[in-house]
Image (cartoon, rainbow, N blue to C red; front, side):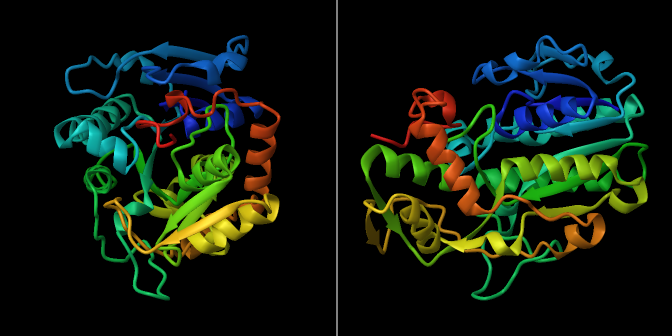
Length: 332
């Protein structure tokens, strides 16, 4: 297949590109390389790989529609990602990139006759869930950040096109992603906790009973490929949560997993925090199992073990560098 990946140099994108090339697909990456392109260096000699540095999602940027010619599927990952990064950028910039940019990409894909556009959305759109209740794709959305609001707006546009355009939109609401990738991020909860535990030997945790849903970056890539390979009627116009109920985990449980690997870790629990985003949420992933028979393969313990190994063996140099996060360094 011929696949175009926007944001292909990023945390998820670089893993998706690796998986696509591994199975012999032809891959075109469009990325402005804001965080560099180191993650793509191993692919430069691959005849099935093409990289173009381009700002494709900002309102004032030009999008050369020739990139979409002959493409079977578009995987749209380019965005301002996460609550802190979006707060820092401001609503206008976030809307410009995450909403208007998505419209631009989809319109170009539809004009070129692309079969599918797979959109990376977020489970943060749900806001929170009642204690003991699992949110589903049909649940009411209660966004608590500009980031979540922008993802919902982009989803609404894409889903409105499902019955009128040749390009089938599919929206994947990803759980919080964790694990190592060619461009690992350390501003996501699991990865950040592991890095802080190794760097400082201690963690300060607020609202330890709050629950989140998690999914390994490799499994995100697997889910994207599963959607890409699925028959159009199965996935056209669908919203799918990506993750597993087995990875619905409280902060306290997560810290206990890390402490099992690092027994000398000191943990201080706090009742309040300076953070604004105070979500507690558990998610159902029944739909993606039913529609695609998809189940994640990597659990939290395995992901934590890999992170610790990569950091202790200095596979990732200078992990506190801003290039490993989408917003300002959280570590002192």
